[in-house]
Image 1: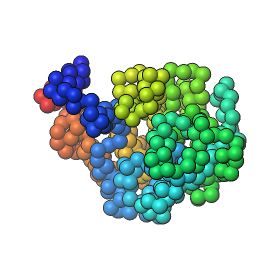
Image 2 (image 1 turned 45 degrees about the vertical axis):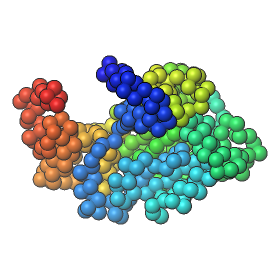
Image 3 (image 1 turned 60 degrees about the vertical axis):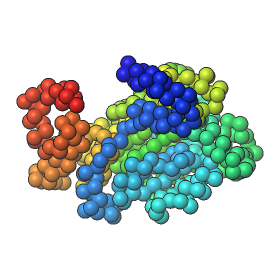
Image 4 (image 1 turned 60 degrees about the horizontal axis):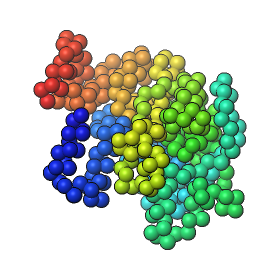
Length: 376
């Protein structure tokens, strides 16, 4: 109701200006921020790890399958970060390699295929070929850019150009093969956006999905179509079998100014006020004693960083509680908890509080959170 009133007032005040391209862009940015933001505004614990060079000899490893546009900016909050990205847009891969911030980023032009399924009880009744391409809005925007730059479209693989004579020379690899070639087997986070081939992307990780160092996976899914290869329940069933817990559901929204006209009508879900057709699911390794067993001190800290980055400070504190002084003494853990409490205490009470002060306040007065919201 408040959002509708806001829009109504804007229409009254701004008149025709509301329909300008620039105004639509501004409105779109705010709407997307509200609907898709899942990262934290500050990372005090990760900043501490950076300052103390915790990951200097063993970089945090991010695997981005479908990397057009580059990795999300918040990953660069980790100072010692290694990235392997894969995509079928050759010009985009070349651009990313030219503009990368360090030699620890590598972008690979390859077609991801599924050669050997990981051992699983999961039953997948969806049968498609092993080719993984893309033809979504992101690809459309890239194609438009190529058109403006007079780049021949035969270098981009999409629904219209995905024919044998155009893709026969592209190397076909599994995600596991790409990780092995780049000494990336102990990957810490995987981002999969492969346009209707998410499940095949998971399959192509093979046994890497079982490694103790893989803490999280962000994956694109479809919500309403149960016959679709990326139907969210198929992904959920697969992920839960391998000890991953669903922690965030992020519907995807686009401003109509950047969509093809037909797209607006055929898939209304993609507009700001449509139903949720597509989205991303974020999974983390289920937090328990068994999860910690296979980790060393550095990778334990990487898990904490993963949780902090995606705004799950409470889960990070739970992980510290389960650690039982395997890596850190009580004094150090208290310091870590205080750092993890900075963001939620500022959000909920408008000031920085220690972990003990924060939890004590809520325990003594459970309604204190509601009182703060009401008065602010």
